[in-house]
Image (tube, rainbow, N blue to C red; front, side, top):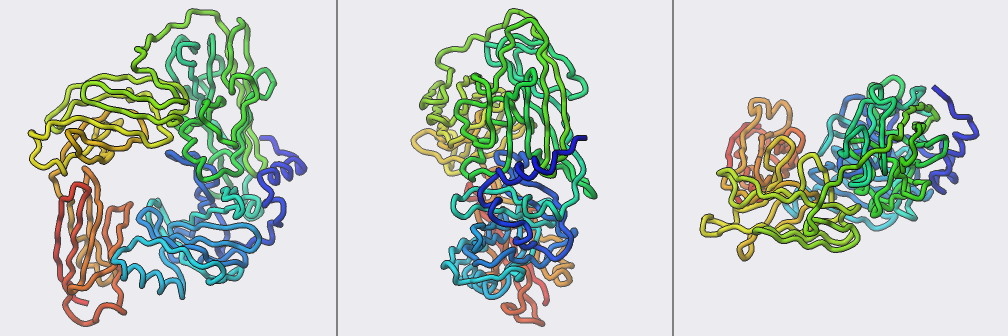
Length: 554
């Protein structure tokens, strides 16, 4: 393991942004009054996005006091199914924060939010506050940590933002002295991608993945791309983190580098272009403007293997604390024929033009720059089973992941005479397990229309099944202080729900991860010492409804 020098580390930390240079790390407070550990770091590679902040562990518990990290004000409050209570703060030092998965706020905002939720009869809400109206001081208790929404355990998702630009920043410059890290990043596998019809690697023109230990030398010819899958680690915890910086050298010349120090939220979906199954590519698609990555050759990082010799490759992976690891790989140039795959001109797609495709009852419109590079359709009409109300259309084979940066219009023709209620129709996409997942859709003039964000295999299905709804641990409701129902809809998904207690609206909320609809018993709204009647209705996206009624004594 190599340690980066103190001078280099200082430069490496501060180059990330102007804000990081102007604020001393001691000036920024901590969000908790206990030792800090991370379950996730900034820029981790996630599905369709970069991880936008640091995830602080909360000692395996919800309900920890979250503190303001500087003087400033609360600017916005949201409550969402995906993120729980969300608190936005603007600080006087030029930084802002967004905190997710909270279980609640403190006075006076807690009462304000509660009143709005009841007034709107909706748990979800979004309130922008007047600047400086809700002032906060460094170290002040402003919220309670939680585990709400898409969360796999109690933690605080902490986003640090450059207020002036809106860029998301790596908060490690301010907290790295509180986190022990002597462990270097570690690589798991390489990605090899021959350029379509222009390259070949190990005798194949298909994208392949090989373990690091099994791929010391590969053979290739033509234009090829390389990628690497790697994770970082810290002391005293077992979590895996994203790699802050990656450098790629060819014959000791820097060919590519990535430095995930900051990015704008609008850039996040470009992760689909730069990565593949957590592999960081060392080449850049023409429609990918990510500022955190840079190629240094004339081919945007693609390698031209056009000499019969050994090409020496080197990856250098570095974390924020300066721990570094090096991985070496060789490509032996072997001159050989590159098999060509002929593509029908009608199936070719251009990244910089609007693409229109219509065939056999399917219409597809892909806007300009929705694709990251030129591509093609694997169009085929597949056999349909009894659940389908249309042909099954393959636009891309399962092994070819083709994400779309912008929503694209998909229309599939159906025969309305075969469907009693066209409001039940929706478009579904086949997943890797052979299961249909709804991508929504509405019927109009013989077609079901929807927007898609990746190419795959699609068909029209019908949803006549109402959501499943069942009381959970009813005998434990009083002890736990919470009413709970399991709720699931495997076809079009839950659209809305509404609950009442004794005929009055009750603030139920959707707990996504265990698929529960819950209500916290509130003594300020319920009369104690009597029998209560709870009623809950759940509606899916095809307007199927389920109603349940239970009684309890409290």
